[in-house]
Amino acid sequence: MGRRITILGSTGSIGTSTLDVIRGLGPEYRAAGLAARSRWRELAEQAREVRPSAVAIADPRHAADVRPLLNGATELLVGAEGLVELVRRPETDFVVAAIVGAAGLESTLAAVDAGKTVGLANKEALVVAGALLVPLAEARNVDLLPIDSEHSAVFQAMAAGRRAEVRKVYLTASGGPFRTWTAEQMASATPADALRHPTWSMGPKITIDSATMMNKALEIIEARWLFGLDVDSIEVLVHPESIIHSMVEFRDGSVIAQLGTPDMRTPIQYALTWPQRLEGCARRLDLSTVRRLNFEPPDLERFPALRLGFEVARTGGTAGAVLNAANEAAVEAFRENRILFGRIVEIVERVLERHDVVPDPDLQTLLEADAWARREVAECLNA
Ligand code: NDP
Ligand code: MG
Image 1 (cartoon, rainbow, N blue to C red):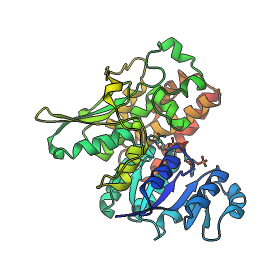
Image 2 (image 1 turned 60 degrees about the vertical axis):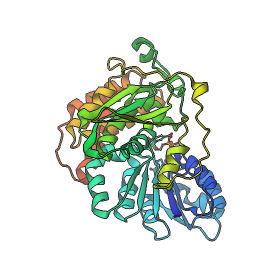
Image 3 (image 1 turned 45 degrees about the vertical axis):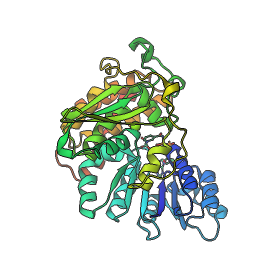
């Protein structure tokens, strides 16, 4: 069973790993469409290699740069509308949603709406609009397959029993680069410090989210939506080696874990080939050299983002959109050296406190909450 795959965010860390997986899988798996925002040279180079029927560039200023570099067989689509058109095309049946941030929501919704199977890396789409995406996927009979390593692990472990038999889901976390730092050391950490992840190589936004552990907060909300979990059944466990990617405990006391080297190509491939398993290209796990697997409870004092993650998962409504947008804006300010590391989560918490949650929001209300939160962060920065 082959796949004709459209990759949204093809120039990013997940996007390039997805192309790597496709190269390894052979001719039945083809890239039918590629999309990126600004890295037009990389996009054109990818298009020359895989010859998709169309590519989309989200930033219209770069359309004129890409066009002359494309082979005649590849059509160019432009802007946010171009991305939506790309996922709707009949030449594609599988969409890898790997745009970073809420910017990926519109095209992910469009892919689900068009009935395409979705491999979801863009966790922010679920954090913002899980209450819309999940029912839409059910209505269109679309599989939303997790690419995030923890959620891929949970998805695989869930296959060992029935949903009603699940007692707990343990999301593992590496603890990031500041796992052993004091709160004082962390308060003034630099972007370079925060970008030095101990186990995973990823794009800059998620790497900083791992340093604040906001990434795990987003993943709690992601898990809640993907698996329809009661928030009380989700637990976070720090596991610095990143070998156990998550675990599911069933009511009889059995705990099923999924293990592997920290390489995103494994969960990406699983999503692409599911329900089959094909030969993989990631480095193999050798537990005799790993020798030791460590676990510790997360420190909510030093990593208050986790507390926010649980709270927002319980609150629902527009809270996820606000948490996510405030975090995106604060992370950007940190990367621009406008705020200290310690202020990222402080600002997110302040914006959440000021927000009047709207229950059962529609898309328009969610987008307004997102825009409101970004304005609030801008005000905090200028205060
Ligand atoms: P990167 O920053 O490496 O890549 C982001 C991609 O999104 C780039 O291709 C970028 O294009 C594109 N993009 C950004 N904004 C837009 C936009 N407005 N319209 C169209 N394309 C856009 O991020 P990652 O690959 O690390 O992460 C992608 C997603 O996957 C995130 O949601 C992340 O949380 C999730 N994820 C990532 C993991 C990883 O290992 N990297 C692990 C688990 C989840 P360009 O660069 O050309 O501007
Ligand atoms: Mg993850």
